[in-house]
Amino acid sequence: MYSLYSLSTFSLPPIIGKWLLLASFTILSGPSFAGSANELMDKYEEIEDALLDNSYGIPIYLESDGEKDLMQGEVYGIIYQPFKKLSNSLGSVKNWCEIMPQHLNIKACTYKYIDNQCRLTFFTGRKHYQKAGHVYRLKYKFNVTASNDEYFNATLKAKNGPLDTKDYNISVTAIPLSDQSTFFHLSYEYRNGFMTRLAMSTYLATIGRNKIGFSIEGQDEENKPIYIRGIRGVIERNAIRYYFAIMSYLNTQTEHEDKRFESKISHWFDLTERYHNQLYEMDKTDYQKYKRMERQDQLRLQKAIKTEQNFDAKCINNNI
Image (cartoon, rainbow, N blue to C red; front, side):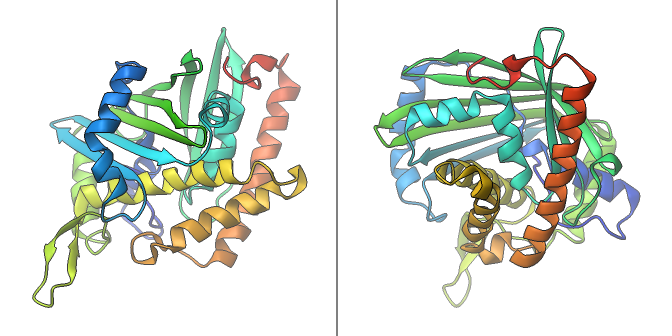
């Protein structure tokens, strides 16, 4: 639950820089939702009011917790797209590589089929451009555990991460609400050790101390909202970044293939700019420039994978 970082690691002490690399992908780690379509609907009914009337201004509900070395986070939200479209998109390992790199710190994503298992690699670095070969790689096993007309579940698991982190688990579940809306749940979990906890504390006491989230803790003397800070602020900022990544991917699929990438990254930035105080990190021109360069690195890396092995189409098809 100590999630994705959004600040540059430039000129930071090494331990802080390494934790920020950790934070750039841990928003998506978590235990599989041990439930069903009925249980997910029960959760929707429980939090429906909070989803539709909250301080975020978007239909999203966040839960987070951390106890000793176990970090957990839960994100629930409504996306106004057909359930089948969302399940097909999130059921394809290839599409995860179109969604994830919209985040500032995901430099590239590749997929391959090894030992009867689809694998994803996230290349994670600073917010500015870095070559994919110079950043940290986190390797996940990808699996769709349920996919039908009423319920979808996909999981990603990784044994080890940067510093002393381990046991990364991701789960995404979804159910249809109407013909044009879907309720989804993103859960994540990972374990850390002393070095990671120390890096977190240092980051939040220094460059991260003024960053705010979306939840309102109270009001100041002028009756202005006081927004959450610290770990929960990190979680909220990046949960919404990934919510927007899924939205922008789905919302631009009707674009011509030649224009889809540019439309997608433009749409993502415009969504984040609605929440300038929480999410702004760089100008749109710079963001687009870096993402175009990173896109070329990703295409090159994926092409090399297809060349070096008998590439299995199972990792391209939906709902594998």
